[in-house]
Length: 391
Image (cartoon, rainbow, N blue to C red; front, side):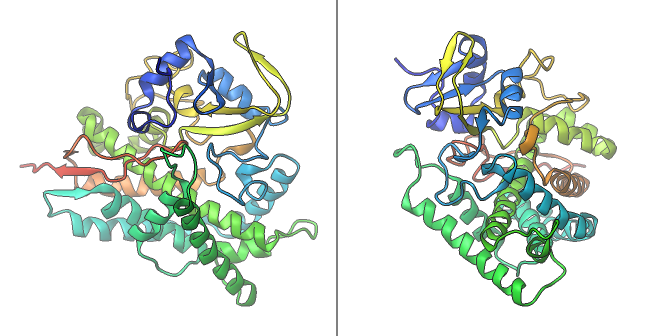
């Protein structure tokens, strides 16, 4: 008998939503034998768990297949008080480096990409647009040297991918993360000797009551920003474009009235978030929906399912850019609410605004495209779009 939700299947990568519906309706606290973990799928349960860090701990990692050496050193893999210290120091760095200065570079990167795309009949949104914009903007924010955007995204994607056959990590995936971390470690060392007006320097120099981040914490925090910015933001923009390609009426509304783009971003974060599932580890026994989860068990918070829970959102399977999806979990919630949410919203708004101004009409060129192999994230490897010619 097959499982109601096979976490490591390619089908879940491409379309987890029918499985989520089954979990919410029949198995709201579900034990996956094959993955050896619990899955929470209803909105209220996911929010309760995400805000109860004392019970649902992040100390053993927040990725279902955790990257070696990451636990306990990043915002996503710590609990208070250590988490609060890391977040406060990171916030100090963000305050020193006002993100508004990145608006113009984001515009320039988007326009440069569109200049190469606009006369084509088809293009790949991921490699030719979203990766170009996100890698360029993230690297400018951090003060990193220019690097090929496709190569960088491929490295990041490998770092967060899952080996479906092994149901976990493999040496190739771990090696990709190590290469990325070494590149950033070298850059942190350079900033220690030659400070600059960039986020890496500000992270290295951030101080509260004499407390500073260690070199390891600076490297891991910087790596987290790169991974989240390059993969999560690029993936979100790609899925946003997919939503608009599949919903012509919504796209036409945004072309006609770009003031609706911020609201459409929020609806896209609800409807099709790239951050689908994150892990917690129980510190005590918890009984929920007649099931007892034991201390030490891994529990998955299915944000992608919670965002489509009809108990929270009316007609959740409908993509409605006129909706006000207050409370969506596209950026998480609680202590681990995404620290880069303002940056992500700003870059997505700028990039999609420029795209729709230049290419107002597009459709999916090949519907059976490949999705990233990940137990946590959902994003297309490539998103082939056809530019529809308008009179």
